[in-house]
Length: 275
Ligand SMILES: NC(=O)c1ccc[n+]([C@@H]2O[C@H](COP(=O)([O-])OP(=O)(O)OC[C@H]3O[C@@H](n4cnc5c(N)ncnc54)[C@H](OP(=O)(O)O)[C@@H]3O)[C@@H](O)[C@H]2O)c1
Image (tube, helix red, strand yellow):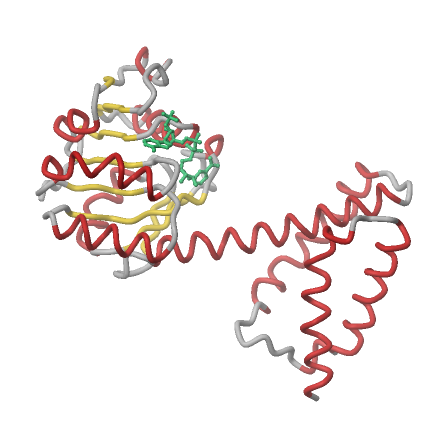
């Protein structure tokens, strides 16, 4: 296995693939790009990226192949004809997928002699390469140790274990948390809007500082067992949630926006019933 990766090939030039290529060019690497639909390399070419005409060609010229496509099916379709070219090389998959898909991809590629690393990008294209961006990696630690310094220009590299499914697992679980916050914020804004409140003032002066205050407590208190500690006073919380749901109904906020509140209410009522 190579220990220095100066020539990096990127398969996929969607919004994220282009951001990855840009960050790697910034770090001084030689970057070769391939995309199913030609003509997507744009200004990457003027900045020095080379365009390959096939995945095989891109894999051949690179020391390290980074894959960032839509989903697992597109990764399989792209790599299947090129898998012989990959043997003995190193490949990092930064395409989102399920835990099972990541494990099966790892089994398939390592079976063909590929040094494989699974990844999950905790950034959006605009934040790739910035201070807050980080990337979760899993599978063989020695592959991570070699690759992480090179891919550090994308975002901080964070290894989460030998299981190749863990990068996808932690990525998806973190996204679940993010969508939960988003659902709550959407409902909050809909409620203020429906009752004639000043949405911008509410957003900046109330919602933002409140969510910032509660975020560490919410994360620390998340519990897979679905139990609610007594000190959280589930009876009081159930009453509070019923109030919010009533207010939401009175304001005419669509019921589907309040799904997260009903999930919390179910949990609190269950805790009350169990006490
Ligand atoms: N964007 C984000 O905020 C973000 C954040 C974290 C993770 N991700 C993950 O990064 C990955 C890429 O996201 P993106 O934002 O770059 O998506 P995107 O802009 O929709 O780009 C999708 C890419 O996949 C390619 N593709 C789709 N189907 C294909 C197939 N059957 N064979 C070969 N190539 C195929 C597309 O090629 P064509 O140009 O030919 O269609 C394009 O290069 C996804 O797995 C996404 O979940 C994205």
